[in-house]
Image (cartoon, rainbow, N blue to C red; front, side, top):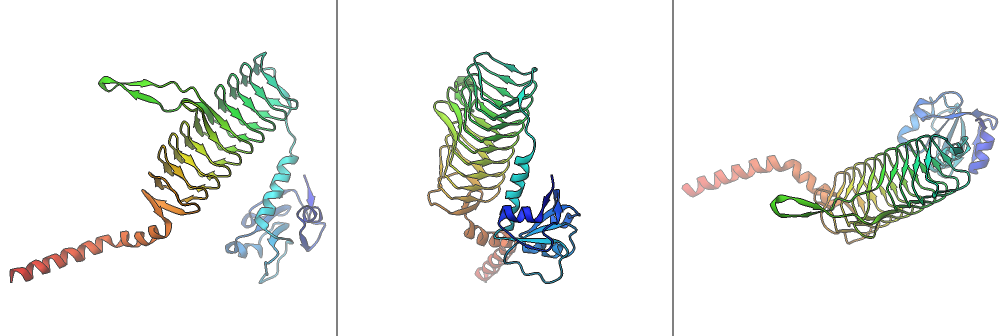
Length: 345
């Protein structure tokens, strides 16, 4: 698909500097630009590439002031990064979409399938399951009994959704993710044995949630494990039973959230963070990578890091001390010897 600078500028409400008839048919990073590609410049540290890039069109902020001649056609916008993302969404939506039900899928007679759905080969849809209109279900997806899935959802290859779970509208679930597997519930018995506690709840994903690849979200023991609207989860994340993730929270890869934890709305959580069970994380909290959250975070909009995690500024000050500990110990040892020598005199 080909677009001119004039069409792109019209869509983005941008200002053209150069040839409005310049055409592009793909996108590329500015440092890897080539003729026919569209790139963007948002981070000043990449500015040097705009003078050498071979991309035909580059999106830049309106405030950008070049220090040398630029060969590419520029389109000035309020926010180059956001505008580039909008263009990518436009291109993605323009791609042809599969429809129809593959004869190699298995759909129970009591299941209800919405209009315009695509169901690929080797998909199983269980009894009384509901699949909303416009959904795309790719090969080898399992949808259990009584599952309800809203409109315009995408289930990528190998997704498993256990019985009774509920998925809202416009959700995207990537390959290999498991929704609704049993929570980690076991009661200690005599002789160091553990008896399984039946997990009778479900998982609820509200609208506009995106779940990465190979994520596991456990069903509740009773009630629901809830992922609120607008949440974005990266790959390889574990969410324990009866946990709740607040709306518009984003979580990076390899994070683990233990059972019954409550993460507030609008939080940003780095990779490999561990959140203990039965605690609350206040709305707007930002947690640095590899932090360990063992206790409640009560104050909203704080930035914390470390294990156990604490205030970011104090952590940075402490890290200076950590690095100096060997020298400090040597000085203390030397002072102790001098004091002991003075005592002996």
